[in-house]
Length: 227
Image 1 (cartoon, helix red, strand yellow):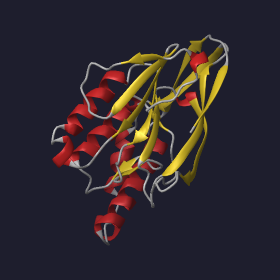
Image 2 (cartoon, one colour; image 1 turned 45 degrees about the horizontal axis):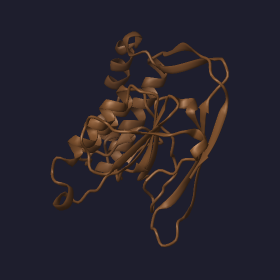
Image 3 (cartoon, helix red, strand yellow; image 1 turned 45 degrees about the vertical axis):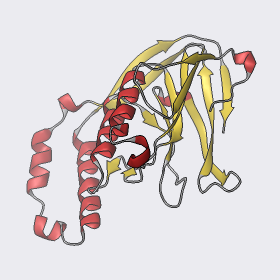
């Protein structure tokens, strides 16, 4: 459920895509959603993953904030990688987040050593002051508190992303060809994958340029603290 102060005049919103456990409202031009993804196929069915994907696909191009327990323990959000043993669902959701330039703001574990509770937004500057705090009563998940900047005064919003069309792939291939793979991939699967993933990210930082796009936004200023 979502609790919203009545002075913000929230309006209930329904997605066209069908999914069991999610709820949405619209506050001015911001779409706010809460979602829970169960891993129990006996209850939710084996098409639950695809239904969630369809919902995210539908809202990803809107001015959107989505939070909730997604149960993707095999996605390492701080380093933007997916475990080699991850399910196809984890890979598809991670790919969707990357391709639609969504920002996932939670970078500290929310249950054990896993980041299961996410805060996704279509604008990176929409969220700030993200803090993982104590659990609520007898829940085994920690709560996540953050500030939402619902609207801002006129400013030039610089969006930054990798310009893969301008990447120096010859240099990347040359760097990869110079690696002693027998020595580099010595160890268990998890260590090898982490080492390989770190190498790719280093080459990406070195040989794929950053592109910036300026977007003009003009609105009033308002901030919301959310827990």
